[in-house]
Length: 261
Image 1 (tube, rainbow, N blue to C red):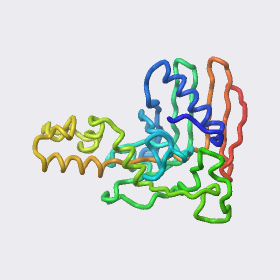
Image 2 (image 1 turned 90 degrees about the vertical axis):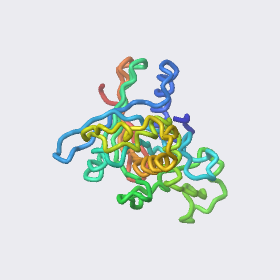
Image 3 (image 1 turned 180 degrees about the horizontal axis):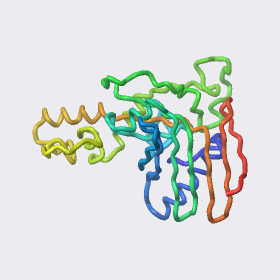
């Protein structure tokens, strides 16, 4: 997470604020969350994931020319292209994520739709279904002044050059070498092979250059970035016994309702 700006929706400000308070205690940079999907038999499937952050924040710049002037409320997670969750999300892209922050007593639940971005060389690669241009805005309100609001090439009245493949690449590069190597491994959830060479701990430590390049390419091809277009947020403060539900309207603005915890 990379803080928030005045134009961010209230739920994102609350989300980032709670995560940063928890981080001050734990030192953990990425917040573990449980991701719920629907498996191919129609049953719930849940696993832990570590969101990479919001598009535009931190290392998730929207293009190589972005100097940090853009942000959004689109959350990102990543996965192996051959994991079960990929086919589950292709089949049903409705998801929920939930996190509990034990030191601050906060439960956060996010609901939304997942859009998958594969490597261009991956057979499943296709254009991203989510129109990201409608989900980003400038951090600096002054950036939108004196712009032609009727120009379709502008977002919130501002020029935007959004490169989703650049975002995916930056997300991959900001993993540790150990985590990058995992993406070169055989499909998750399958029987483990006896050949230990199929499971390098760090690709750069592979002695044979040709093999190293092969594993590096496999890792990049298997890396999938998932964009979560959040449409509902439920935040419970267990210490204060409060609960607020945020719902996105059709025009991308948000409503907020205080409810019983």
